[in-house]
Image 1 (spheres, one colour):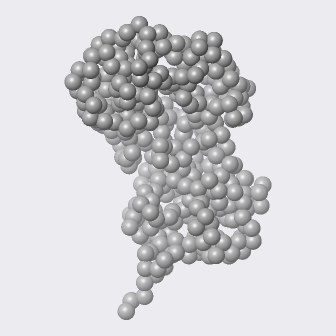
Image 2: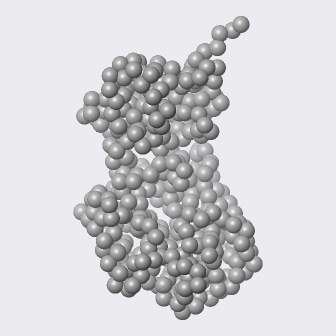
Image 3: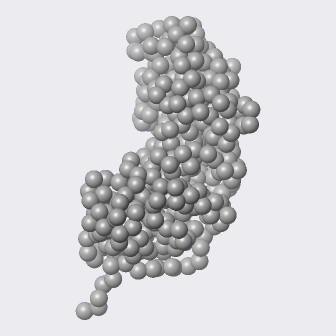
Length: 402
């Protein structure tokens, strides 16, 4: 009987074009290796989708299987499952090892082939489960371990010029989806039909702008009436009615990079109570944008917008923070939690950070102006201010539609 390997290299085909050039990945790895040197780590085992993609270019599809990017002072190797064949090799900036399903824990045997035993291992404490941490200890027998999740997050928060260029393109694609949604809104149309129009328009645009990319994960949330009360409420088959409050949310995804466009809209007409709340949220949105500049902390921005809403007796309707970082993240993986506009985040804004301004007010059913009001723009922090790169207009002048 032929012996079945625990792992092997399946370098099937040549390297595919990645989202960024070789120099970009080398710079990211240089930053990680600096972190490793400062913390005494000799091998780093990254397991999250966002860090594997950030340092290697490969965005994995787990489906219950573990994946990793193993970084040493000299190597960067992605570890992938046999079900993916040569795709991880083609989409990784560095080397790739495929592990097999013939025996349990071949993943860790493949990792060990790169790290060896007895190393000082860096890992992601906010991603590695207790079960997998135990296997790390068993198979790698580390001299010690270090949690590098906070340090890698801080590195990802500062965007390179190449990242900012990609984010700009993606933000323009989000606008394309927004206009397609506006054109699809009609009384009696279902939420799902409007959402599909926006998603289809974005995916076609992504394929045009990024002809060498892999296409996955772009989506739209389009909510109406009561369904607007939560920012992450899924799409339904509810039919739109005249006078409905609507919430437009487009999310084009390119190589793991997330951007968003979110707008309050009304179908046909808006009553006076709703218009007053809408205008107040727009005012908070504009005030918030004016605060985003180098030297101010996330907490200070939050406190100032809180005071703005408190003066208008609206703070009790705020439901979450006022914005967050952008880059490699998604609704099901990754988040640069150290760059969110919340009271408990003291990170100071710096040039090169990319952050949203997205105030939301939710008034409960039965109250005048009931519904969820949210505007969302993406801004780049510049040397002395910010640049808003979202183009789709907000407010009543443009978004009473149908």
